[in-house]
Length: 150
Image 1 (cartoon, rainbow, N blue to C red):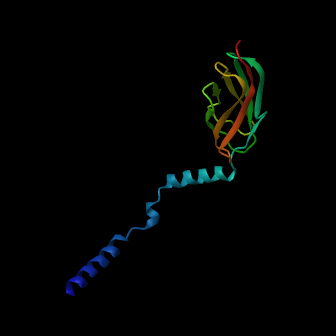
Image 2 (image 1 turned 45 degrees about the vertical axis):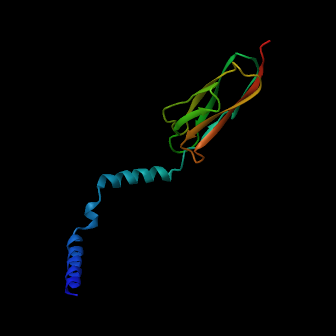
């Protein structure tokens, strides 16, 4: 019984001694500034992406031809538009996207090339963009017909 009382007294003493520091003294002011900046940017909303077209139709081409095209992308939001990645549904399609942020009101070009070697008939490929928009991903389509070699 006396042992339990002594252990209890020691634990209570330890709790009182360890709580002498004020929690507000542990706050790092640089973290507060960073959080305020982040919150200010978030209050503006996410970037809004707009394309001149969502699909590129390359028509009819011969097998082995390489088609190049482009999509114009505009930022209609109030914060920078950032495209972090662009991936194609097939290795035959290679996208090139702007690596720098697109400022509100500005636009940029997303280029691509489609190699029809080994492709025949109707073709439909996609380019998926990873962005900082509300949707996070955006999809562009490339379509057309490849005439086989004789």
